[in-house]
Amino acid sequence: MPAASKKGAKLKKRATKQERRFFFLGLLFVSPWLIGFLLFQLYPILSALYYSFTDYNIFQPPKFVGLKNYITLFNDKYFPVSISNTAVMSFIGMPIGLLVSLLLALLLSKEVKGMAVFRTIYYLPTVVPVVASAMLFLWVLNPEYGLLNNFLSLFGIRGPSWLSDPKYTKISLMMMDTWRCGQNTVIFLSALKAVPKSFYEAAELDGAGPVKRFFKITLPYIGPTIQFTLVMGLISSFQYFTQAYVFASVSQMGQSITGGPKNSLMFYSLYLYINAFSYTKMGYASAMAIVLFLIVLVASFVVMYLMEKRITYDVE
Image 1 (cartoon, helix red, strand yellow):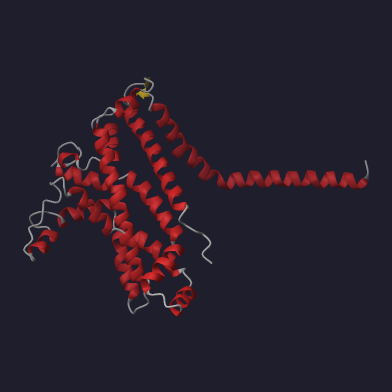
Image 2 (cartoon, rainbow, N blue to C red):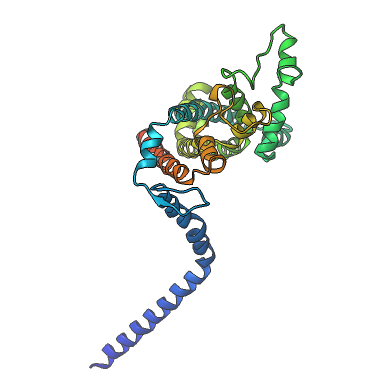
């Protein structure tokens, strides 16, 4: 073998050995995340998939029942109710929150004196834990001495029973979620700050007004941010639980948790929780979790597909 070939083979062997060493070093550094993912994410997902085909109540070994849980779920009278309530929060409440966040971001993007204080004030509700926010709104929305009804009474308006009237329970949740819109406001604000001022200056020279500049420059430029917040908000709203749990528990006055007044607070995740931890129907709850995963997957894909046609990433 020629000397050059021997040298090349030796260098290749050395490079392969070094690559193998770097590979194992990389695995070592990523191992904490990898172990956490395998134990706390992948294993629970696979376990839920397995238990969804079983009759399992924690206290007895799981018994394989095939598709029985899924058939029972689609024949469950509370299934369409929970899906309907969840859809209202996902396709009405969540977009309203995003719209308010965008409007607040537009206001907070103005360079005026003391704006840093206003930005802090609008973000503060996000820092408050969700349970604490829900408890706070239980007082604000109290029909007798709540702040909101007292404010409405100043104008001669008799406020409704926000938490006991099924027509207003989801509206109450929407108001609280809109109050907690600081996180999305910050995301939109950062996107608005990234829009080059030269775009607005050129449009203004061409005679474009504020409305036209917003729809022709601002919206296209922050389109990817809107897509991100919309998809993440959709995923989060399909898992709506904590606020509904607090509101429903108070409306039941110490009784077992149900769906609130006329099941108006029976969201899908809450119904899943009831089946899992109140009725210990873990196999049935696992089937519900798998169905929820598929619903979120399809809804996210549809939103991404529809928005991808209207969003451009090349705004130059």
